[in-house]
Structures are given as C-alpha cells and as structure tokens.
Image (cartoon, rainbow, N blue to C red; front, top):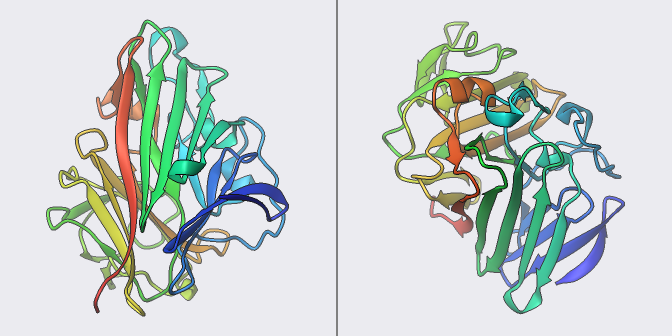
Length: 316
C-alpha cells in the first residue's frame, strides 16, 4: 500500500501479486484503476482526461470524468426524494455520493480500505469496507438510516469497464428478457420496449446479440434492465481475446435487479460497458418507490450487503 499521483490527484495504490488497484481519496474515494498484473489488462475504462477535477455536490455526471468505479446512491437519475419527512428533496444526477468528499481509513495489515460519507441533505451514512485478497476485491457495504422513517434507496456500482468487439457478457441462464430505459438508443426503441435476451431484433430489423459488444464504429448506446430478478447473485464479462474475466458475486436477496450499460461510440464517443447490479429498478428513485421496487433501510437501522469483484483467466 502506497501513496502515488494519478491524473493530477493524490492516490492510494493497493496491490498484491495478482492485482493493482488505485483509489482517489479526494474524488469520492473512487476506484480509478484495476489492473490484472500477469496480462497487464486495465479492466476499468479510462477517459482521455489526464488531469481530474473532483466534482462539486449536485454536479451533472456528464460534465465530469466518467472513468473508473463510482458509487451511485440513493438514485441513478436525478429525481425528487419520494417519501417521508424528506419528500421532495432533489436527488442529483447519479445520486449524491459520487460528488461528495469521503473520509477514509487504511488497514495495511489487511491490504484494505474503509471509506464513508454522510449525506448533507438526506438522513443516511454510507460505508464501504474493501479488502484485496488474492484475485478478489471483497467489499462490504453498510447504509445507516439516521431518521425515524423508512429510507428507500437505489444503489448500484457505476463501474465502467474497458471493452472491445471481443468482450462478451456472461450471465445466468434465467435472464432472458430486457426492457430498455435509454431514450437516446438507436437500436432498442423507446423507453419501455421489451426484447428477448441475448438475441433480438433491433429497430432497423437487424438481428442483435446483446451479450456481445459491438465495435466503437457502431455509434450506439444502450441501457437496459432484465425483467427477471437475478436470483443467482452473479454476472460477468469475459475478454475473448485472452480469457481475462471479471465476475461480480453479491447477495442476491439484497441486490436483486440487474442492468447493463453499453456505449459503443454513441455517447461522447466513449467505448465502455457496465454491469450494474441494483437494489432498485428503472434508475429513478421516485418511480421505483411508487412501484415498490427499491431497497428500504428501516428507521434507525442498517442495510448491509456483500459484493465481490473476482478476476480470473477463463479457458477459451
């Protein structure tokens, strides 16, 4: 564990013989880099920006660096908070915590890092305990409700991943239908359009394999949720050029929904994808609460869940 400079900011590097991780304490303690040492593969998407500027509270996510792994809570889309004594409080784009200063504490003996943040406007504190153990990044999350009312929320790991036309999603077999929630998609139709997964017919009539990443020249972007819950609690991507694989494993009862973001040149020219296990659906906390599809932290209570990122080499 050491302090380094990364894109103009102070950074913490955690590493072992398998992986090298970089965190930015002054940028919401985000994970900025995840490198598999034997192949040299950087799993996390890197923007062209060489100097990063931490965002202020309430910033538009699109106005700032979109690389790496940001925590998103308590909503993905900007929305009014839906209920309780804080009803109507504006929740910013991509939530609050990605654009707030976090506190942190190092655990050198465990190759670990604890980071936490308290909302300035809503009644919660969010804590992430991280340990690097072999080829696994083990995360334990705690949301603490500081109020006397139930606290509905959506959390997702907004972890943008490098991809190529050789990158493929690997998901449980029961996930067979998706619903699009991206208005600007050219391929999947308007918000709410349903498609079979992985193979479907797009707007133009072309047959698509939604599990396979298309080239950046496709100039498309997609965001969709699976209509079935992910009861198996895992999802993965594999790079078919050499078998480098990243698998997420997590508590399916606490994080039951799964979304996928893919931009193949269609958003700012970026080329990345994200697997987004979620505690709620449809990106919008107001809508999700209305249809009872959020996690709920009890009054003066806690909501806890585990999440692992496992790097491996799969045979092709």
